[in-house]
Image (cartoon, rainbow, N blue to C red):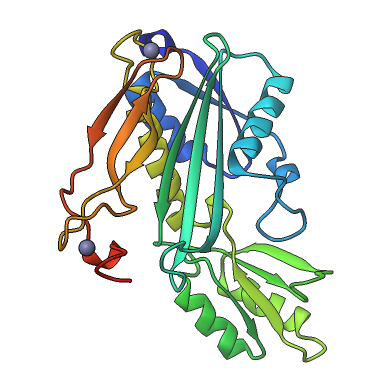
Amino acid sequence: MSKGWHNSVALLATRHGKEAVIGPLLHQHLGICVEVVDIDTDQFGTFSRERPRPGDPITTLRLKIASAFQVKEAPLGLASEGSFGPHPQFPWLPWNQEWVMLQDRVEGLELVGWAGSSRTNFSHRRVTTLAEALAFARQVGFPEHGLIALDDPQQPQVIHKGIQDEKTLQAVFQELNADGQGVHLETDMRAMCNPSRMQVIAAAAENLVVRAQSHCPACGTPGYWRIRSLPGLPCGNCGAPTPLPRAWVYGCLRCSHTHQEPVEESWADPAQCVFCNP
Ligand SMILES: [Zn+2]
Ligand SMILES: [Zn+2]
């Protein structure tokens, strides 16, 4: 059924250059022609605190696609959304998650690709000297990765975004540090200012392609994918079931067909076992 997407136009609401990675992947593998709709996606929240993000990523993705369809008509809509924070299992690692959603308005389908990576420069620091500012900048991959400078992270009056050269960084530091109180620096996570994030967006788009190419064995609908896991992978030491998944359940977006596939591992790490590692 996805051959029905060949040469179909998909609107992508972005001002952050995300089409550079999403467009070629979807065109090469699915034949979809991505068309950028210039919409101020900052209305759905920013990473630099001017606007809080409205809800969970899926809600935000739907809002972004809906805003593109208000501008023009197309059979398909696309949106991308990311989040940053500590890794859920290893909180000392930063964790970048990316979602890319494809909506087919004709078929009434919604597919979501996902990728997670700890290869992100997501970070911030209060600096009081120019030397500290330059040291932080080097540490986070400046100038390929952009910086944001604020006077006060809680209630910013002044925000400089997209700083990507040392001369600008020096000037912004002097301006914001005029009172000698220091400057709050953070990594600019907008896609066009952050090649590390762009790679994770590409991985999420690749995951979307894989899902789109997976068809329901019963009805042929694309997007046949994992809908839940079944816990109970046996402990490698004592054989008792652990909370880790032993199988994935795949399900169809349209009909009720499902099937199970065992995970690749046969045994769980005893550290995950309630008997061996109480
Ligand atoms: Zn055990
Ligand atoms: Zn089906």
